[in-house]
Length: 316
Image 1 (cartoon, one colour):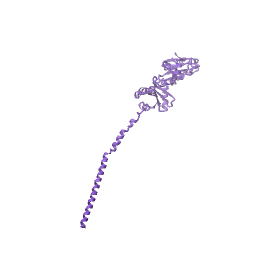
Image 2 (tube, one colour):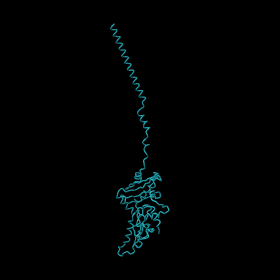
Image 3 (cartoon, one colour):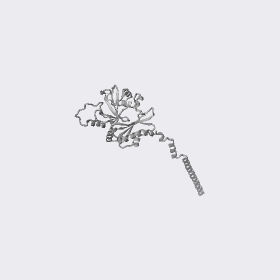
Image 4 (cartoon, rainbow, N blue to C red):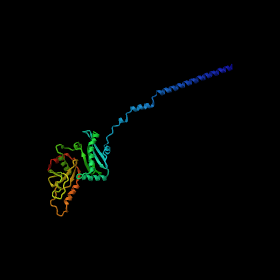
């Protein structure tokens, strides 16, 4: 009996152990299934990041359009040997445009000295380098407003290495906003009247005049009319003078670009010349005057003062 009772007790223990084991296995499987379902419902991480990027404004939207780099454009588009460009700009409120003055600068002092000398003799001799600079200046003036519609080239100039010598190659005088700084309306005066007055205002020895005389001297006229050996003017010139010897004079030719060639001649030549002067003295002297003319840029000046000089003007 004891043996039978032990066997029944052992069987009961085995049944209880099996039931617990089955329950544990069943619960574990349910836990795993639940985790898998949870993972399936969770959005993929990559898709979430992609959606966030779409919602964020792009860098292109936040960044303003790049500004036009004038100097970079000039140095790439109009590259020339031995020179580079700089540009100064200002905003013009009444037109809404950006105005520029362009300067052509030499890369070295040696090239600057070479070109400065050629510019000073440019009225009596043609130089390929000067012609090339002038043609490039014209292209810049005409082409750039077509590239950027809101820009305006006021002027293009050659400026020496040390900045002490400059030549205005081209300027849009008609549409220049630089002239608006001056007072006085000059619309009723001719370009020649304004030129004569500007030249005297800048170079005239005496500004307290009774009258301003402009004498037109044609090419081929002797520089010294009192001497048969005198060299002749190679171009038409203008001699400005007051009514008195003390007022002095300015003799020059215009280049049509805001610059003039100044001839260093006296208002009146001496008639009593010493007999012991070297042979061909006057010929050599007047030849030297032609070779050493000074190229000068004429500043627009103050309109009110210019008008006062025009009122004193007499053209002969």
